[in-house]
Image 1 (cartoon, rainbow, N blue to C red):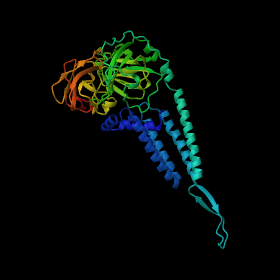
Image 2 (tube, rainbow, N blue to C red):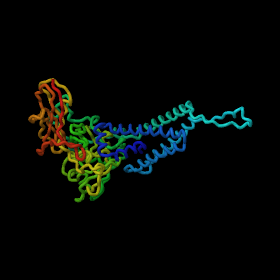
Image 3 (tube, helix red, strand yellow):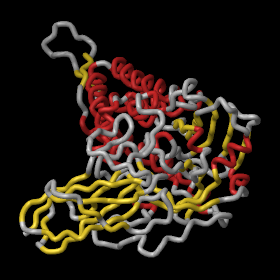
Image 4 (cartoon, one colour):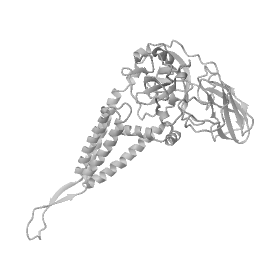
Length: 487
């Protein structure tokens, strides 16, 4: 059960136009959710201030303001994917507590006292009531009490959430030995140059882009996978049953469709999981099905082409990442991995459902928002070093970076200086065509201000296009360039 703030935030994410989402990802990166929640917090603080001022004159109007907020939170909660009546509980309880706190503070901040009738009146009258409109001491004391109770309640809630969390569940997972191990990394896979992205991305450094304001908490005991739709027979698996299936281990690079040219939303890891093709063949996919819809525990959906996940590539239901159970923020206990497809059409985290259907019958989350339905990853080269606007001494300077074209591979990377002739870079070794590839070019740098550009050629012979395109609707394109100074 998510709080009303989280529910409203989820509606805000789902309703935001594409340009606003791209602006948030581009400018705030993986902090976009924190910025959104902070903005909601500020908005609520202003709203609470307004409600408080209104309550000072009319308690009934103030209570109506609280009820309005509760109604908005409840409406947001009940309309979230997979919501039920229980999702209304946080809003309703929060509303009751809010009304009680408001009444307490207003009554504490206002005090009624009486005074004698004026002595010069001819006829004595009873004492006349007078309202002291602001009792600061009583208000501050009551406010402090409410704050203490709120903090205590928040602490208890966090403690309960921690106890009910999935850290213990994750810690108890023992990854099975894979039936098919990953190809050993060839010598020279990682050039280990200063400033160059490592070949394998540490779990803590792996990018995270998704729509979840709070990370779904799914324990292995609660996890179930349903495979259904256009199949001969439905499959239902629990986590232990999944772990008993033959596992494969593979090095695979993932890329987010929101990645700008030269962006950092790409990472490579060693994954262990169940081959998706084997599972679908066991279910018996109908010939008319062309879309595999994967659903997350929080209701998010992705649509993958059936022809791609069944073509023999290492599409996985991953349970491990770099030798450890999946990190919770990266999809524990199970997520999808499909080499060669952007994550928005393939890399579903917190996976709980696979449905065989058609593209005509169903639009997944991002397809509903007019992103392209297929999402093959575009060929890209990125310059990691030297950094943009850096200054280096003249002489031989290593220009290095990574390039990717998952499931096609990288055959060549070229660099040029100030629009001059293209120079071929030296490529590092790679274990498979499903990973990115490091490269380096030794530049005889001369004094001055220079523009460096890089382009890649994939395993099909196609050269990375110069044409610039934004991420929407099917991924960014263009040559990455950096401007540097040499002295």
